[in-house]
Structure formats: structure tokens, C-alpha cells
Amino acid sequence: MAKARVSSVQYEAPVYQFVVRLGQCLRRFWNVHIMSFFGKQEEEERIPPGQSIFHKEKIVALGQMLKNKFLTIEERAQAAHRIGLLAFTGGPMAGRFAAEYMKEVALLLQNAQVAPKTRILLLQSVACWCYLNPITQKRAKFLKLVPILTAIFDTVPESTSKNVNSSLLLKFWACYTLSVMTCNNVSYMEELREYQSLKHHLQVLSRENWEGWPENFAEVLYFLIGFHRH
Image (cartoon, rainbow, N blue to C red; front, side):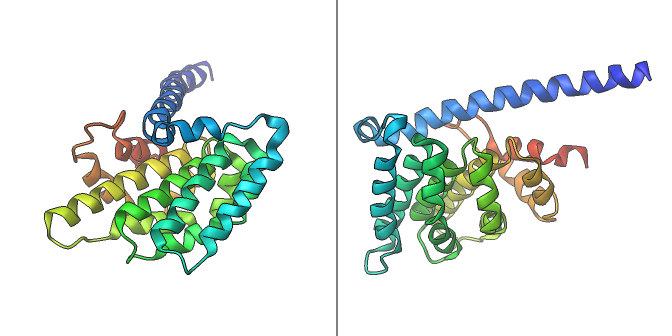
């Protein structure tokens, strides 16, 4: 019994340290690649907690843009991107406001004809919406975002250098977004483990050049799912 307890502690300690380090890594990456993207805009949209209704008004206005099929897909994706940011900066209440419009994001992500650059904006919106928020993560699961995101890894780009690079960057962002969703959510880990081809895709992506990223998020996701134990 004592030996079993010591073994358990020895195993849990490095796992705990990894999760802590991953949380710090996600935060650094968030600050550099997400929040800095918005510059002054982000500062303007920081709203005191007591004024969360202002977040709702902005999210509703952006949600109307997201649903407006007369706008270009790029414009709709930009609206989704800002909804995600407001969902993050506005806290749990803003996350609930944003949930109403995430179905549109899911639908756009399923469209393989949408340019990779635009789909990356949508992935960033999902990452913002789900960041350390179990409630929105549960909602994302209901919207079937896991199979939608894992389908990105099955995409085979046309053979031109530009298309290959764009497709690879899209897959990098899919790895990051799934890492955000999975970091503190066991149900995601269990669901992702069921995707037979995902293990191979992550192994291939982990060998790509992740220069400029704080972590190799293919490896991070591989570890979080528990593929290293199977």
C-alpha cells in the first residue's frame, strides 16, 4: 500500500508541474499572439465588471455582423474574432452572451472553402471563448467543435508552397485551440483519445518547425490527451 502511494505521488508530481508550466505557457502565448494583436483596441474594450451589460451590447452588434450573410466571410470572421475577445475580457457573463453566436462560428469552420487565414480568426475566437472557462468548454462540446477541429488535420492542401504553408499554420492553430480546450477538461481528453488518426497527425505535426511559438502545441496536445501512454 505504501509503495503504491509513493508511486502515485511520483507520477502525479511531474504531471502537476507540466500542467502548471502549460498554463504559464498558454498565458505567455495569449499575451504575445492574441492580446497584442488588438493593440489599443484591446485597452479600449476593457470594461469594469459592473458594466458587463456593455459587453452584451457590443457582442449583440457583432453577432448581427457574424450572422449577416451579405457581408464577406472575412468580415464575419473578424466579428467572430472580436466576440471571442469580449467573451474573454468580460468574464463568465460575457461568455454566456457570446455562446449564442458560436453556432455560426462552428458552421464557418466546417466550410473547407473558407481561406485558412480566415479560419484561423475563427479558431482564435474559439480559443478566446473557451480559455479556462469550463462552462463555455461544455457548450463548445455540445456544438461538436471537437470533430470540427480534428477534421482540420485531415485536410490535404494543394501542392503549391503557399497552400502548404497556410494549411500547416491552420493546423498549428487547431493544435493550440484544442490545447486550450483540453488543458483543464478531462472529458475533452477522453473524447480526443477516440479519434484514431489524431495520434498520427500529432506525431507528424510535432516534427514540423514550431519556431516562433512558445511550445510545440502538437506535442502539448499529444501529452494532454495521453497518447504517450498508449
